[in-house]
Image (cartoon, rainbow, N blue to C red; front, side, top):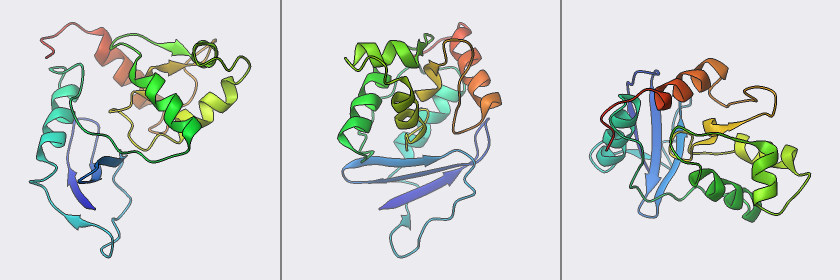
Amino acid sequence: MAFTRFSSPIGEILLCGSSAGLQRIVLTAEQTPDPEEEARDDEALGEARGQLLGYLAGRRCHFSLDLAPGGSDFQRQVWSALLRIPYGETRTYGQLARQLGREGAARAIGAASGANPLPLLIPCHRLVAANGLGGYSGGLELKRRLLALEESPGSQE
């Protein structure tokens, strides 16, 4: 697996992937890659870095990258549903549970969303509680910033 680490408007980002696709994003990049399993390859992950930076600059509203997040069947089902939430829109945990035919599974949806290894690319920040923001692995302030970014008009690709 390869990794790259770079500065962004939301802080340092660690991005990991393989020939199968992107596997993990760490938003605070405090995590150190395992040198036995990962090798730095800024060039191989350059397109992903560029697309993420374009999104964070308000110039991109979707990604065209191969994703390989792993996870259980249920988690992948939730992450796939998150990918279908349009840019600039939100859904509640309950709405997503009903959409997936799992009425009453809002907490399980929240847990799967919280386990998302590819935040930003799989837009779990677009998932909110019925009465507020809900949680976010990158923190609520970052969730607010991302939702505000998607509300502002720009020249998105």
